[in-house]
Amino acid sequence: MSRKEWNHTPDALPLTTNPLYQWPPNLPGAVRWYWDSWLPISVNLCIVGLATLSYFYASPTLDQAASPGLWIAEILLRNLIIVTVLAQSLHLIFHRTALQGTDHKYDPRPFPRSGRMFTFGDQYWDNVFWTLASGVTIWSAYEALVWWSMANGYASVWLWSDGWVWFLAIFFLIPVWESFYFYWIHRLLHSDLLYRFHALHHRNTDVGPWSGLSMHPVEHVFYFGTALIHFVVPTHPVHLICHLMFYGLYAITTHTGFEGFWVAGRKRLHLGNFHHQMHHRYFEVNYGTLEVPWDKAFGTFHDGTEAAKDQMKARLAARRRTP
Image (cartoon, rainbow, N blue to C red; front, side):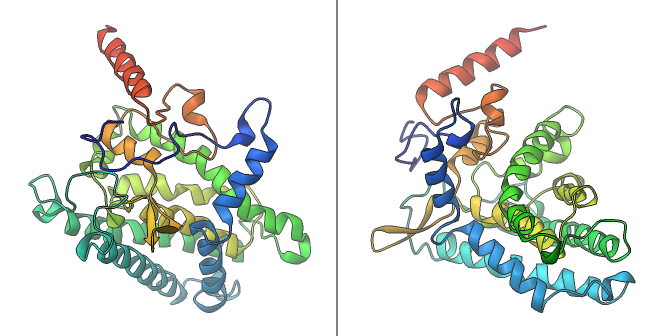
């Protein structure tokens, strides 16, 4: 890709999807994929750890959740604190103090920007407002609903004693479900009917940590509606917390705008997502994730190469010519 268009692109272009879904499946490649996704230090692993701590120290018991009470405010406060600390810390490191400069920053344009398209005329405050006022509120409402439903028997609970293999497997299946749900909800949000709501998120053609959850309330209802799967699949409250944190916190880290956190010339933590960064630039590609190749299956995959860009232009031109 052109340096005029991007300040930084990943070394490993073209982008590839999970080797498990190649045909025939590339099992050694899949093992490396999951190792890199989870170990030794990864956002995935940090989210599981944070969800576990939150379950034990900042959540109600199922007995408490059986009736509405202050535990709902506890969930909201916990999520507000976690989101604010994470998003603001990343904003300070990468954008306010620019400790890493522009090294490994995808978009060459400065962030944040000002303009009439943003609430309050400022991208930073726009993103903070929609993240906290709408995003965390709706996230917490879904979490409280499922907690209450588990406590009252409307959603089945799976305990460690019911089977530890399934209990652990759920953590690894969350990204798989996320890839499926996010792709189709995202395509729906790009429809003529709903794009007027999704457009708020797409104000951010360049992104920062607060951009990830900066969405219209209607989009947040769809986005965090992923939690409704817990009414179908037996899970534990810690899975619920982890699931919603995966949707909420991963949106923050992948919208950092930088490939990762580098110290002494080495990448210590992978953060950014060039696959999704291209969606913010081109709009009509990369609706899903790299975990499951839905974009490849439905012809919306952009692998970061000039050839893929040419194919995208040809596809869009053909669509415009279609009456």
